[in-house]
Image 1 (cartoon, one colour):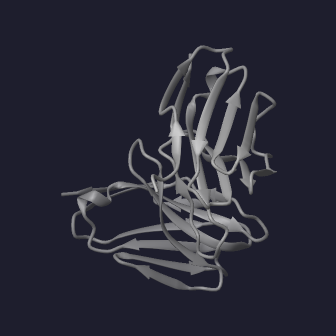
Image 2 (cartoon, rainbow over the protein chains, first blue to last red):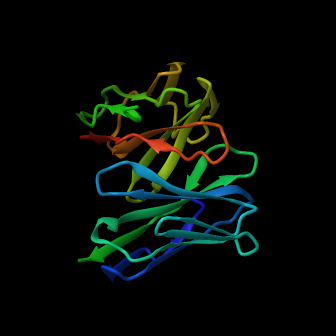
Image 3 (cartoon, rainbow over the protein chains, first blue to last red):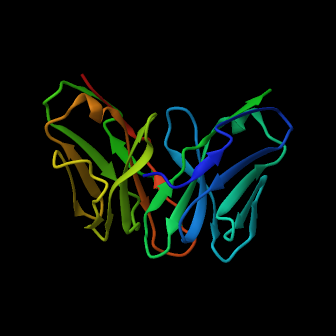
Length: 111
Length: 114
């Protein structure tokens, strides 16, 4: 079953703009991860944020986590056409080792 | 490392036939996961292994599905008999139990049951 609900389901922006995707979840988590999936390909791990962290950066990616609201956001700055993909949040519940994936956000970056 | 290797990439089979999907995880990874992706249900965890031992198979849809991991470098997911509703992309992923480890996914097997 899916835990994360992502918002928006689809997002279309121009190259150079920032893209923000949100994820909400329901349980107590150990960590939350974001993945990217290009059409017809496997998922690629982007970034992991632990439950005791509030913000994390990696290159053009910025992830926030609010455990009191059970929500996370992924910000991609200065987007490029190559960022066009589906983005998934995934949660690792406390005491469990497997990830539960959200429904994903389809991002389209127009050149 | 070549990453997680899945075979075949595409499989078309007739209803009732047996289907075997294969996965070679990254060397040194001690967790292996099988997921299924469909438009309707998204990514669903089927089963996962730790050190070749099945830990949680509660996501396996029914007895027609079985998975094995005979050694650290190989796993199979078998569907017997296959049904049209099994059509999906099946992903294998592996990870290391160390802190901060994400999953490495294979390219998936697109299964079509006609």
